[in-house]
Amino acid sequence: MPTFAPPRAAIFDMDGLMLDTERIAIDCWLDAASSLDIPFPHSAALGMVGMHISKAPAYLTDLFGHDFPTESLLAATHQRYLQATLAPIPLKHGLLPLLDWLEAATLPKAVATSTRRSIAEHHLTAVDILRRFSHTVCGDEIEHPKPAPDIYLKAASLLCVKPEQCIVFEDSNFGVAAAHAAGCRVIMVPDLKDPTPETLALGVPVVASLAEAQRVAADWLAVQTGA
Figure 1 (tube, one colour):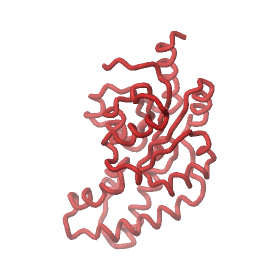
Figure 2 (tube, helix red, strand yellow; figure 1 turned 135 degrees about the horizontal axis):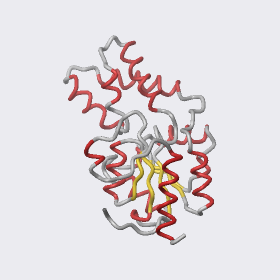
Figure 3 (cartoon, helix red, strand yellow; figure 1 turned 90 degrees about the horizontal axis):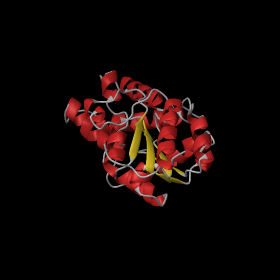
Figure 4 (cartoon, one colour; figure 1 turned 90 degrees about the vertical axis):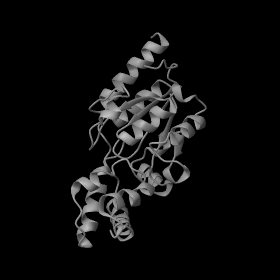
């Protein structure tokens, strides 16, 4: 295991980690496919959890072939998702106490989400937590999306800390891979998909809730600061 510097900041994924959006997204994929009379199993939608939308066409082509109506399905799904997320989205259990604890510990926070900025800011504003983050980095602002490390490197830079000084909270395998590749310390809180063998091989803590993630982070902070 690498040796980390004392934690000085925290970075959060959004979908499936802070907001309960992944179930909404899967329902939108399935409903859109049904409306277009396209056979589309639940497993295909589940495979896109944590995936940047730019990766979806190649993923769908690999699954269903070049004749699959990818663009029609993407457009229909996007419209349903926008409609389904007009109202505030439920927060994941333990998020607000975790934000409170980080603020009490004077650790600045950023969001690093694969979602485009217009949608991310809408979602975070609707639940009144956007103001609690110093910075947000969004999927339409990064050349190489998760699992590449770019988004976490940029978030750390905006927080004016080194990546190894950041605690990252992630729910997806793509996101964990990105944060680990950036050199951050990562806690995984799986949502709809369990950690893969590749993720488990990274040795990151895997916990059942953000409340448990807070306890891990508190232990790290206490050890590194001698508290």
